[in-house]
Amino acid sequence: MVQMPRLLRQDATRFVMDELLEDVMFSIGKYKVEAKEYKIRMFTCQGKHFIKILINRWWVPSSQSSLNYDDIFILDAANKIFQFNGSNSCIQERAKALEVGNALPFSVPEGIKVPSSLMNMYQELQQDLGCSILSQGNLEQWVM
Image (cartoon, rainbow, N blue to C red):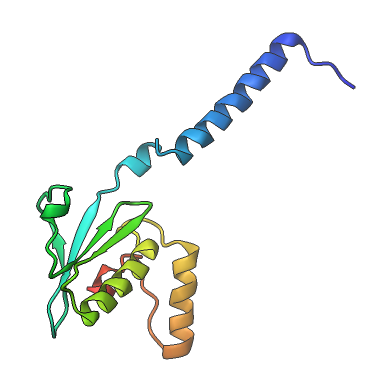
């Protein structure tokens, strides 16, 4: 077995520890600079016959009383998507909200490279339905 000098072993250990700490910090929520730029968005799904999705641009207090029980709210918080179904919401609103919630994880803002998972979906749509492959990965126009 080759012995490393003590100083090099400490530096190698420190490097490995720094890498491990970086992974742990990332997994508990302290993201790198590019991940901090994500804007948290809230969508409202409302309407009894024609369902429309509204992007809430105003701050909504994060309390139970601020949620309307006639509508459905979808919170896109970068790495998780939460859906609040109002007790008075209809089945059509819930189905539309589910559709939006399933599409948002694959959606990326314009200007960011389309992920391979989304590119595979585009290719399947082209093969099955003859749809053209989009050059960007923002899916909001499809589900809104």
